[in-house]
Amino acid sequence: MTLRRAIVLSVLALVLLAGCSDSGDEGSAGESSSATSSDSSSAAPTDGEYLEVPDDVALTPPGTMLDFGQPATIAWEPRIDETAILDVTVDRVERTTFKESFQGWVITDEMEGQTPLFVQATVSNAGEDRLGGEEVPLTVVDDTGIHVQPTIAQDETFEPCPGGPLPKKFKPGAKTKVCLLYLLDPGREFTSVAFQPVDAEHRPVADAISWTGSLTPLDDGKDDQGKKGKKGQQ
Image (cartoon, rainbow, N blue to C red; front, side):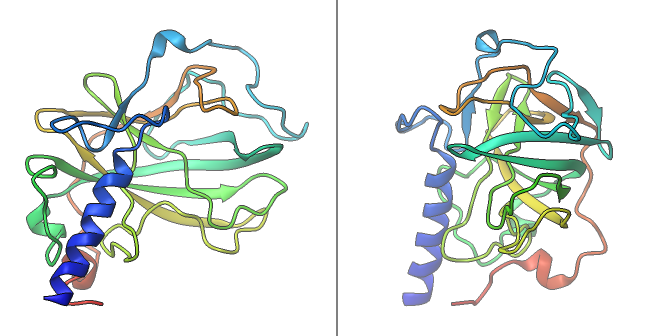
């Protein structure tokens, strides 16, 4: 009983974290647990750079549309007066199922009918600051224009797709691969992965940079443990 409760609480925390919107509003029953809307009309497109960066850094222009496998250089402010810069390549987006990748996890009523996606990306620290532990600021955009936030497991690592935090030590020039989990609401289709430039108050300040491509099945090269997930742990 203790084991089952620990897993249930872990998954509930995962769902609740995904339901937090930028405005801080709490979703009500029946609303999406993993998506927040992005009002494209509030964005102010710009031909210039949306944040101050060193002269030797060229940010990818807002509104740029890329294919999977193409790199972009992005910047955001994880904290006041600190600018993080990453070179990001979305390598692929894998479509999976709860049956295939969530064995040992309790699937809540809110998750039933949703489609899990794994976004596989390669990132490099292109700035001058250490970025250990920072989250990679990517969303998935569905066919209604909703920007779906990544779903993050709390307390336990979701082994099939361990999440978007960068390594604890991620100094300038460091490079790593990340996997982020997203849950699409029933009936919604994937359109792109996006980075939305925002200001210090998390308001859109320019058009999003986006990556598009075909969804792929789970990588056959993954080991069995990666596909089975967290069965029987803790």
